[in-house]
Length: 470
Image 1 (cartoon, helix red, strand yellow):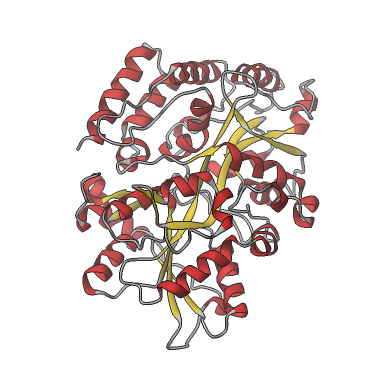
Image 2 (cartoon, helix red, strand yellow):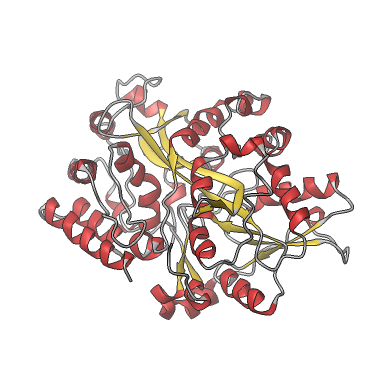
């Protein structure tokens, strides 16, 4: 049993990965695309309380939900969703529910993500909470640990869809073997590669790399093309971008990154050092643009669409973003999985949001009906896939649809759900997403110094272990 956190310790501020991916995306994906949950991140106030005022002041007022996702019915269910996520998809989901359930409408409101937890804490104390809440999945364990969410285990035990729900979402929605939420939307990281640059470099555009060694070999050839082209992109100053795109390289190489709880060992396995050395070699070979060293996440999602990057770990949201960017310089690209040291071993970071029921909700049964509605086969295809978003279940039949056939890359990126992982930790921000934290520090030393990697990793390990026991 974890010690329950007090409410004030749950207050969060957002730091763009950009600053998922989050956890808000570096560049919010438009309409039908997903915003990665790995670039923007929320942190416990205890970790960065001094930054909260300025961060909150800079956070823009969220756009209102679409008219069809709002309701003036005095009996409407109230739903809060954080700003900075995939607004387009959430609007679609609520609009569809309202059309199908006119006697049980939802009134959707977007809350500034830096204010979300404080508002929930106040609501729990006063008994005035929304009936439903969408939240960045990575912080669900904190709410579960604090006893602020409704346990839906017994009410959902007969839902067959839970058998193949997104494993990353299910991991963080589960606490002490009890379930507290279901996926609202999903984002995954994958390997995007520029087929035109592959062809120019003499590589087979239909054979993406299957290991880190192949990435290095391919990148060497692509960088040799010159004219500002580089083989790969590593975000040098963005903690969240790196857990989203470099973390999977380590997982695929058999490594463990974060300490889930006090006593756990972080940065375990030969894969940590192997990926650090690989990244150091990539930077030294000039396979990564020099400008990437300053990448805070603010321009992360815009890099692949320039046409100057041969390969890049990024998210499904980049399909729409890249196509929009390349109108003036079209190129063909493909999507594969992020590999490890051993050929054929892959991993992905699963991000996105959960939908949960705050303690004190007066509409638990109706809220459960909405949750189950989202998991239905029809909604998975006709709402998520039609909007070129990922399904939130891994059943292969859900990706065999007319919408993905028209945009085959969606089927390719959806494969990442089956190899995805979402970290589970009550100190995720302090260990991983803090821009001054040990995760980014050890990566920066690997990328940009010649420091002994064993020492670099051990320093990171010590810092992360200490954080997990605070």
